[in-house]
Amino acid sequence: MKHLISCFYFLIIVCLASCNLIQKDNPADTILKGHIGFAVKGPLYLTGYADSIDRFLGRKTVLDTAFIDDKGNYRFVIHSHTPNIYDLKSADSFLLSSIYICPKNKLTIDFKEPFKDPVIDTSKPEGKYNDFRIKLTWKFFKDNDTKQFYYIGANYLTVNQFDTFVQGRKNQMHLFYDQYFKGVKTDPSFEKYALSEIDYQYGIDKMMFLWKHRIKNVDVFPDSSYYKDITTKKYLNNPDAICSPAYYHFLNLYINNIYGEEVVKHPVRPQWEGKPMSPAMEKFNMAVQKLDPPYSNIVICKIVVDDMPAAEFKKLKTGKSQNQIIGALAKWFEDKYRFKVE
Image 1 (cartoon, rainbow, N blue to C red):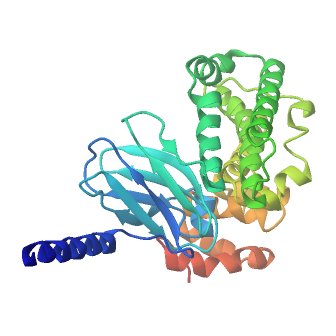
Image 2 (image 1 turned 180 degrees about the vertical axis):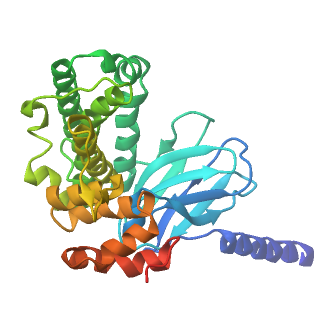
């Protein structure tokens, strides 16, 4: 009898210890967790935008690391005060991109097979939001027939044909959104993000069509109807799109396209202080002229970090007409990036 009682107490202690090992989700925590049903190399890495400027630049860095336990489970506790877009990867696998997570979300994503779309728990809104993104990507970017025409065939259309094609594609994506969330009240932040991704992917497609021709030395100059819905003040300076990476990408392509057209139309380039103006400086001026602040800063950041030599940035910073635009950025660039502006 004593032996049975001892065994009983031992089992209770083991059960209590096991319960303590199970990690509970604190309501205030932001959680990404799930199961991986196949071998991956090393830990998992969660990458995302460390701050708003990295978001402008499209630069994701490793924000957290999680180990996979012997049962294939992983768990991240994310410390963020704003919605962010994350990628999940290991040392040898890219598991999933563009994961949308808001503070206090509890998101469960299981990866059952390699090279297959994951299974997302859609019992919570955050699960539905990410399931929508995966299904939208599959339907409009990964489906074999759609992919073949979108990435290759559409490049051989005329300007008017392509314009009709991408307008129809955008409308179909909006319809897909409406049907997926029919009868569901979505979070306003996600709605702005998701619809901006659709609307500005449309603008990206239009800019990329022209760029692909230009790099083949086939210059295409559409009439104003091609640009009418992507050059309005509302489309270019859109506070509702400030969470959308597609918006940032479009703005940079838009300024690059203006610059590219100017180079072809006017081979003799403007001068600055008696010398030919650099491409970076020209694009900077175009961003200031075509975009209102703070939206112009999205493009200016990209130009300064990626294209502009430190000496030119220093000279620009000291120019009286540009002090208000550049001054606020100068210290940030000095602290974060590769050069010191004196």
